[in-house]
Amino acid sequence: MKPFSSLLCLLGTLASIQATDWPTYRGDYSRSGVSTDPLPPRLAEAWSWQSIHPPQPAWQGEAKWDGWNKVFNMKPRQTFDRAFHVAVAGGKVFFGSSADDQVRCLDARSGKLLWTFHTEGPVRLAPTVQNGRAYFGSDDGCVYCVEADSGKLAWKVRATPRDRRIPGNGRMISAWPVRTSIVVQDGLLYTTAGMFPVEGVHLVALDARDGSEKWRQIQNDLPAQGYLLASRSRLYIPAGRDNPAVCDIESGKRIRVVEGAGGTYALLTDDMLVFGPGKTGQLGAVEEGRSDQLASFQGNHMIVTPERSFLHSDTELTALDRARYLALARERKQLGTEQAALNKKLKALGNKAATESERDSLKSQLADLGKRLDAATQGMDQCQLWRSPSSWQHCLVLAGTTLVAGGTDEVAALNATDGSLAWRHPVRGRAYGIAASDGALFISTDQGTIHCLRTGTTQASLSTPTTASTEISR
Image 1 (cartoon, rainbow, N blue to C red):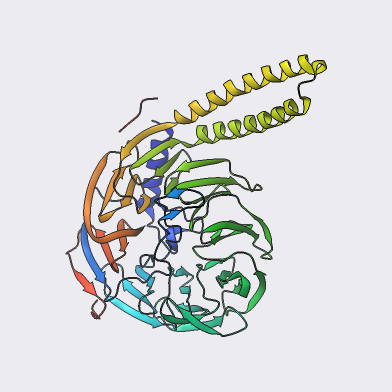
Image 2: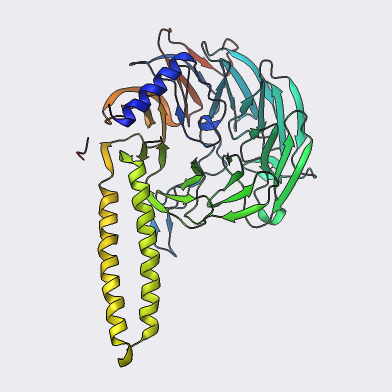
């Protein structure tokens, strides 16, 4: 049995023993989009919930073109709030609304509305659920902690010392809105407030029990918008159209800003940060301890397992041999560094007659490096295990052995082993969010719809007023 198949069988076995929650955006603080829960062969719609008003994104989209750099058909880079993304924990579904300033909790089985909680501004990002509590921030500048079972307020803290309101997106919001997600780890809560560097963007750590402040750092050069990522020692702060900042989790002090093309999509794997999509739909990979990119990928999203990486673009879905690809990428980067150093030496020698033999030696070394670079690049191209056409470009998750991709007016399931299409299901609008938990899928769209797909249920439809609410050979 192949290693990847063995891994997937193991994940499926573990998932059958204990179903997993999806307690934060994309399942964890790495934003992996991976659930060990296997999906049944075919799902039916169990229920759907419909908002009266669709999501009201903070940013409507990218400019059509960048004339200075001659870049056309630019990709939107701030897409964190185009749907009501959900967290799923303890048999409940939690989500915030940018349309009516509420957080809602539904029963995961029936879709029945269990409780609502009002804030004083749009709630643009999914709550984080931990230890029986739900944590979220709002454009009103506050961080909230409520009891997950009842929605009762446990505590509320303004994330900045001042309360000043300004017009924003046709609303009155805080000058320091909370537009990054909440991370709760080892008893501490991390978030940011502020999107205007000139006003100060606050990175804060609070005690998750009572909201008391532990430390605060203020940055004056980058905004903070999107979903935070965290490892045991680092916080990764998305900066809208700019590149993410890496901070020490114990103090909040900035370590570096990584190089890349910007965007609020990000994934953390083995302390490697993958983010984008930049202006043209390109993901950059930056290793821990470095600022420069190890590799770049043409695509919108990525799913990473120990054996494989799945690259998701507007038109196709590709599986890569992850270990081999990374080894070749590191080799190519090292060869490129050596090539640059030799070119610098060659240029410094000039055309003096006394240096002719040394120049010839450098040219010979450069020719050899060129061949090795070509071989490494060709090897990277050969790391594709399979490639399948895909018109479902908005979102991608992995549940057990099934890749689920969100498109326009439908979602699709593909076999992760060979990329073959398993099934498709209609949804209302563009599927920007997918969560997988307990053998079910929860799909969030830009029309304010949340669909629940699972087996053994009767279809229902709920809305806001309802209180019942192609394989490649190797």
